[in-house]
Image (tube, rainbow, N blue to C red; front, side, top):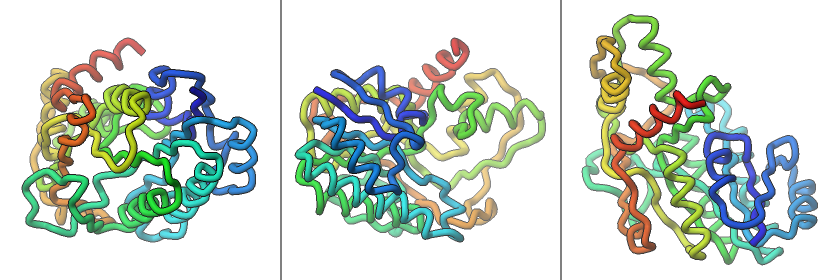
Length: 285
């Protein structure tokens, strides 16, 4: 099986490449820009992959509110072009999406299933949802994977970074921290998401599927566990999303149900265990 991996230079892409079974052709933005449909078509036609995995995305959540055209160019229109190419080649397209396709139901308190109707509250979430629809409507063979709050060791010291690294850097400053405590989700370790994704691809799973670590927490609870495991004594307090004051809306509750994932024979470890594994692995880099 030949697999073309788009976004291979990102945190998820770098964890995914060594876990995929088969001949993997890693493609960075410089080699295959999603927003250049002609080059995209030519590149994939030359490779003739059995599977295309797209880890590339526009993920500047707050910036998307003021520059929506940039978010839609990558997350919707480029994804539509990719889906058209994959359908013409008869290959499976694996597209990653986000828990941010939810949020409109502010009273939600149980994990979202794949059958639940989405309702994003940000430009970013809307652009990703539109990308989902483009894939599902355009490419007959597809697997759309919704995940959440990715962090991985390839973000350590990198340009992109991740929430865990941001917290650890802020803790070094020694000042009290105020972290949002009214958004509940499931931050997920890219190594776990990558391993599960590789198993799903090998099984030939298709359709829409939720994939995160197990359990859920607020960002305040996540940060508190980061500091506990890291042995940091930084003072941390919970604040509301309104107090934090970011341009883009966030889902107040976006934990994703993993029942269908379990039906596919894949179980995920709890977010606490995943975080502990990440903190151990990062010291080995």
